[in-house]
Image (tube, rainbow, N blue to C red; front, side, top):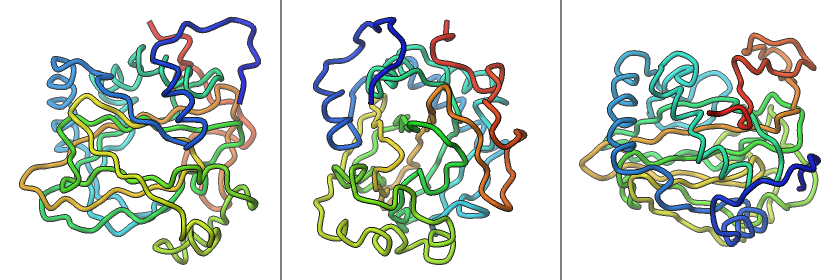
Length: 265
């Protein structure tokens, strides 16, 4: 995927991360946040979870885990809005993707000790109400996330699988535990890569990459923040019966709500 603009971007991270992101559909980049930033954002994330957190797994979301998630933190919480618009993380996302991006969302996720249920295997494209070239997530660890605390596992190269390009939403709703492998049975035999993170590290993965997160069998909360970026020229395409965004079908998301990475200070 190449950028249509003639303006060259400076490199933020080594090109090996770009190569892995494009070949495998994900990459792990250490130290995207400083220790001071981690402490500040973790405090804000936990406070916002207590204020507005809800249990995921309802509505269009798939999975049986009891992970708690904020609602529109990237719009409603000043500190976390700053994290979703973090200039370096946004610049990394654009370098990895090679296209202009905008922020589509940003939320805190907390998985508590004893929540041993893994997130179901899925890809983000199935649920994305967008028509565009790419969507990618930056999954930012705000605490150390070893395997026993529920780090991410990916299927390398699964973004390059054959048609259908997008799994049917009905398949994910009716069989959330198995829809990815029911739709793409060849993925059953592909290798999986589990990626433990230190606080301040992030994984970046794109929307067709199959992934899951393990249960939390440790003694401490797993605290993460996910910033979702989409192609800056993507338009809103709601799923039938799921008009959850304050947008019209075919509309370009407004910059004042969904800011372009190029506009970050």
